[in-house]
Length: 393
Image 1 (spheres, rainbow, N blue to C red):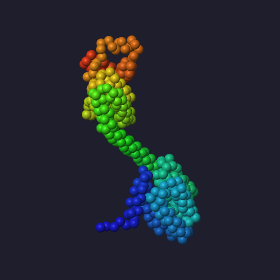
Image 2: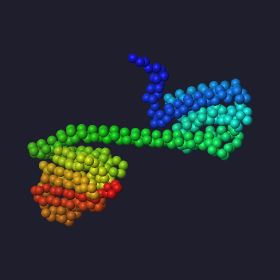
Image 3: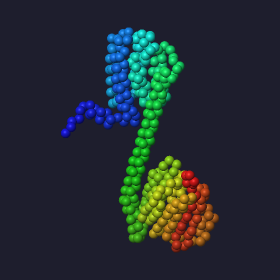
Image 4: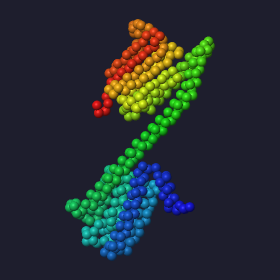
C-alpha cells in the first residue's frame, strides 16, 4: 500500500477547499512563477559578474526567492488571493526592478533587460489580472512596463525590436479576460445547478402530494357523495381542498416548465392530471413562447374549473394537446351534463360573461380561436387553437 506524502496531502486539501472559480488559473500561474524564477536564477548567475554590486544583488535575489515562495504558497492555497497580497507583489516587483539602477551601471541597463528579468516581474501582472479582470490587468501591465521604461530612462518606439511592454499589457488583458469568462461560466453553472435541484425537489413534493394527499381527498370526496346525508358536506370540503391543491401543483408545474423566454406547454398541462382529469400530449417537448403558454394554461384552468362546477359530480375531463407545426390545439372535453341550448346567450344577457372573457378573450388576444361545443347529456368540449411561429420559419 502506498503512503501519501505531506506534500500530496497539502495539494489535495488545497484543491478540496478551493471554491474560487478561477482557482485552476491561480494554481497554473504558480507553475509559471516557478519557471520564471528558474530563469531569473540562471540570469543572475550569468550576469552577476557584470554588475556593479554583485554581493548586494545576491542579497536582493534572496529576498526575491523568499517572496516567490511566499506568493506561490499564498496563491496556490488561496489565502493570498486578495488586494493586500497582490498589491504588495506589484510593489515588490517594481521595487526590485528599480534596484537595477543601483546594482548595475547605466551602460549595462541600456543593453539588458531590467533586473531581475521582465519575465519574473510579469507574475505580478498575471496576479492582478486573475484577481480583478482585464482592465486591471492592463493597468498592472502599464505599471510593470512603465517601471521597466523608467529604469532604462528612455522609450524605444521601435516596437518591432522592443515589444516587451506590449507583451506585458497583452498578457494582463488576456489573462484577465480568461478569469472573467471562467467566473461567469461558473456562475451560470451554479445557477443552473440550483434551478435543477429546486426543480427536482418541487417534482418530488408534487409526486408525494399527488400520490398521497390528493388521492385521499379524492377518495373522501367520492365516498362522501356516494354515502350522502351529513357526509355530503365533508365530501364538498374535501373536493374544494383537492381542487386548491391541484391548482397549486399546476402553478408549480408552470414555474418549472418556463425557462428563459420559452416554455414546455406539455409539461404545464400534465400538471393538471389527476383521478378525474386525463391529459394527453406529444412525447416530445412542445416549446412555445412563455407568455402564450401561460395564457393557454390559464384558459385551460378556467375550462377545468367550469367542468368541476357545472359538469356534475361524476364528470371526467380530458385534455388533449396537439402540435400542428404552425399552430397548437388544446381540447378540453368532459362527459358531464352539458349546456342547454341558449344557456350561454342567456348568461351573457344577464351580465355573466365569465366564459367569454376568461377563455375566449385570452385565446383571441393571442390571435387564436376558442370554439365551444356542447349539448345536454353529451358533455362539453372547448377547442382552443393558437397560431405559433417556429424559429427559422
